[in-house]
Length: 220
Image (cartoon, rainbow, N blue to C red):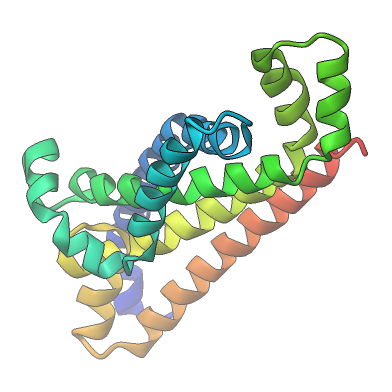
């Protein structure tokens, strides 16, 4: 490892801490807001009442519209919103705003799909036993969908991590800005390769952890 790189280790540590901060905020927002939204999307789309169909279409259209935007464009388009919410358009806390907005619909759709993968026979058995809608959601759907939900959560963390790296292009801080400032602008291939390898290692750890966790909670 070259000596100049050793001098940048404090900056790399600070950048990694900023990235983890953005990751924590984005994933938390996705779980707290996207999880219930995914359940509502499933219930509205699968429910027999016709009145629920417009609600499902509207919520689904909103989620899909946000998801179709490339994150770099969404990041720039949401700068006015970011200034209002965070009081600034730069820094990891500001970058967490568009990260959260992008992560919520992504996870909502993933939760909806995981619930759709639950066999209908299991749900019908719960209804035959007199379970309420809330009991079916809490004790049947979410329990049976645990492996899919864990896989979706791992994929969410990987996606938010990649989004967090992109925020460096607008001064969001983190690993992306570190690579841009000390690697790309200085034409230092060693820093760029090392940082990319670090991100790849983090992704592998996340995916392996998610896969192992999914196997552990799968009781089928």
